[in-house]
Length: 211
Image 1: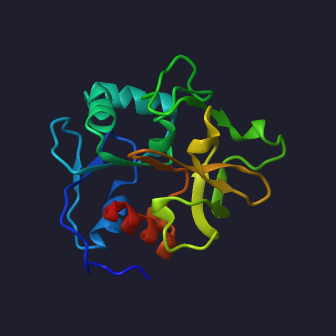
Image 2: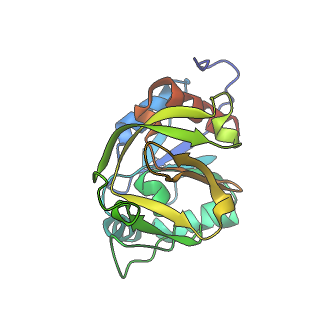
Image 3: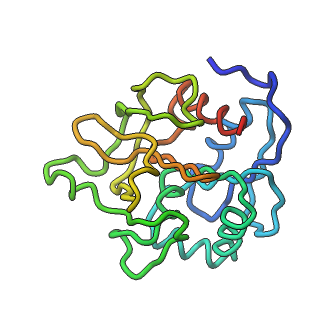
């Protein structure tokens, strides 16, 4: 079990509110460690680290970020200011160039690649993929303290396909394989929901706070 407030340095966490996301559950996961994250749609929010949750369509996510003047701000904060970033579910998918879900919409393009429908992997796969799935973890800072294979909670119909496979830091491996998490420098993303994944998810949150 991850320790709560012990040795957690005080830091400002911005949970980006763009109208799509499981905000209170994500807030609760960080509050578990004694922090008081900022849930905000204000592009001028000051923070040490940024979390972009998300449940919904790629196109709506892009549209909402732009309508709230958050799209370019996130690129500036993540790419230019090199702030640590965690994208969850749709929040990870929005890091990519495009998605089959929403032709004509361009994502943040912080990770080169595209988002594809799960049926590309197996026509018989159940879509959406909902529930606990076995996940194979690679050597990555946010998985420190976890076993090579752990279970996390998923709910999604699309998966990411980075052009550079070295950015993949874990794979969903319950019957089919696809990237379940990515990392690139200060950028981390997970397809599953750590805030709904019990103690395994809290370990990831703790490791993100320790970066």
